[in-house]
Image 1: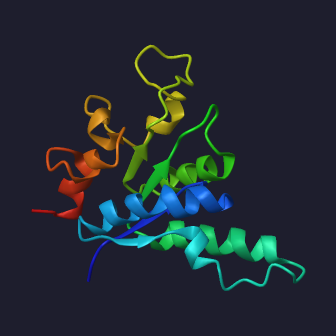
Image 2: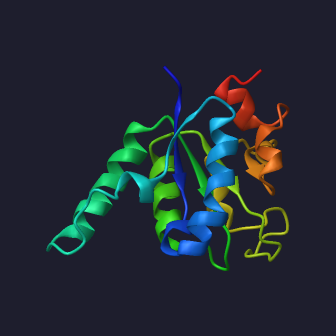
Length: 154
């Protein structure tokens, strides 16, 4: 059975991003043999015209973070999307492996060491956090980085 990875992202809020940016990320993760749990695709069965839809979506996303094996978070933006940050925080608190993707060149930090808020790196090893940080889709397949090793990719 393949490992599951929760793809925390904000791309589903925009049709253009959903169609152009999301598929390459999903394909790269699937290329490592992972089963990708993308929240916008997994929540498309919720009827958004019914009362309580937002609670249902939040609970479904929380359940997916809990039940997945790891989280891969798109942390673009200054600051990054607040929903993604909550999902990432849940994964860190649960002790799940966490991986960050940022191809946004802007810095969003007070730290000289980390390109983002230092709390986003608390689920990673101190000395080798860069192995868990990705700045391009092509880099996801890099066998020398943590995600490919964790996935057991050849």
